[in-house]
Length: 159
Figure 1 (cartoon, rainbow, N blue to C red):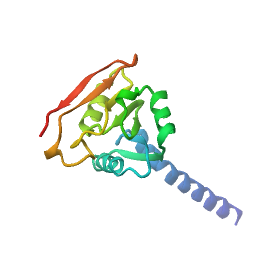
Figure 2 (cartoon, rainbow, N blue to C red; figure 1 turned 90 degrees about the vertical axis):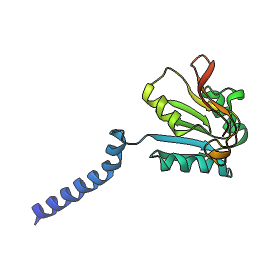
Figure 3 (cartoon, rainbow, N blue to C red; figure 1 turned 30 degrees about the horizontal axis):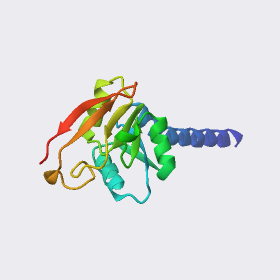
Figure 4 (cartoon, rainbow, N blue to C red; figure 1 turned 60 degrees about the horizontal axis):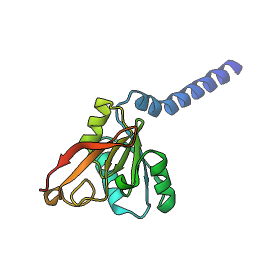
């Protein structure tokens, strides 16, 4: 009887370990990018941007933050005040500030540029999560270099 108990116990422990490790193995394989977003809990445009990311395959986690704490997080991570927007994400070592389109995030992750990340300052109408793209106003996505300098990464014309 003791052998049956040990055998069942080992089977149960093994099965539990396997189930617990399976989500980790999916992340380790890099099948989908994971992004952590700091945002104001009451901001609907941030939630709309997150939904766009999720619909494109990103695994998104969020953390509520606002005001001075959120601005301090941005500054501490290399996002200058003139590049700031309403939410900040971190994906694979890069900072993503504001309503950055998914295609630009994916391009950054593919090209592995030496940079802090990308930013869409302010909240341009028609950028992802900020209204219909067919009514988009012109805006730029900026690459933020390690020294804090910026350059245009992508330009979006008005619709």
